[in-house]
Length: 68
Image (tube, rainbow, N blue to C red; front, side, top):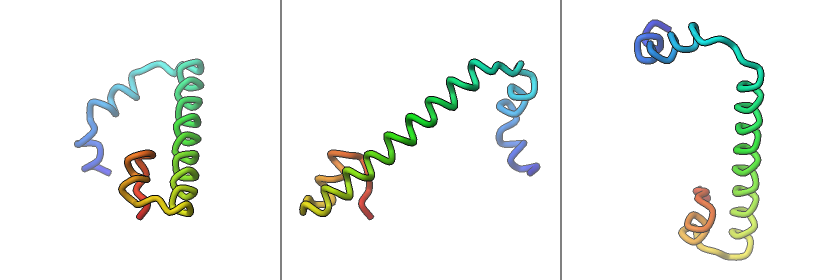
């Protein structure tokens, strides 16, 4: 824990001194959910492309998902 705190000292201090804001927190949670949804969709597309016979390079180029 000590090592983590030393490596992230400024971030930890910012978190401790920043006032909690529900609106900002809600926006962050929503963006994280959207990002997770995009990642899931990309993985689904990559799986479908693999089934269709696309190469690993083509799949990565199209989706950014590493098929391995």
